[in-house]
Length: 251
Image (cartoon, rainbow, N blue to C red; front, side, top):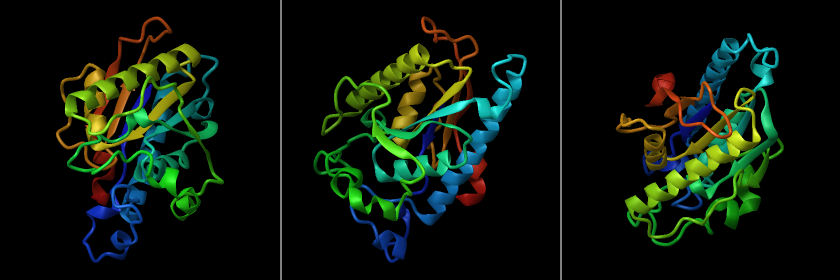
């Protein structure tokens, strides 16, 4: 099973005089607002319920007795808001693979000239001011490593929409190849935490033409593979299509 999640509310969406917005250190790499953190925590609780439902459906299998037998592989865009969302989600899950959050540029934001003046991935907070990350996340909870799967190439800037879609589609395919080759999908789930455009684009790679128009904060995609194998993982069921009804009370 694979989940795609958009990050929580970003602090630069708050009024300009709001202290949370004024504390942003890198304008193109904002942290989550306090509401965004709550949204991410609620999303973790929501995903737990979905994993538990899956575990109960598999109880006829001896190797899966309950949710605690299922480990979550957490993959995050390296932008701060996505890392924070990943930590907030992971704290609510039972077992995290290698107790690690894997940063993956393949699921980063669309690098549009409308949002960035230069290539941002070398100067985001995690790369340029690593010592300041403890203001936003508790790295004693989880280790951070690069690359759950080996990327083919780095994103380019400026990135046109078709190039972004190609990069995202390739990333999804590489992620699935790694997942189904090296892991038992009955015992592991993948959760990738990303951005609005990336989540919308990735949804198309899962065979659904019904793309949520907004994919608002903490929107969730859930994909189930009932009969997946290393050789065949094309057959899938889209259970949640980029909605965030679970946090409507926090919008």
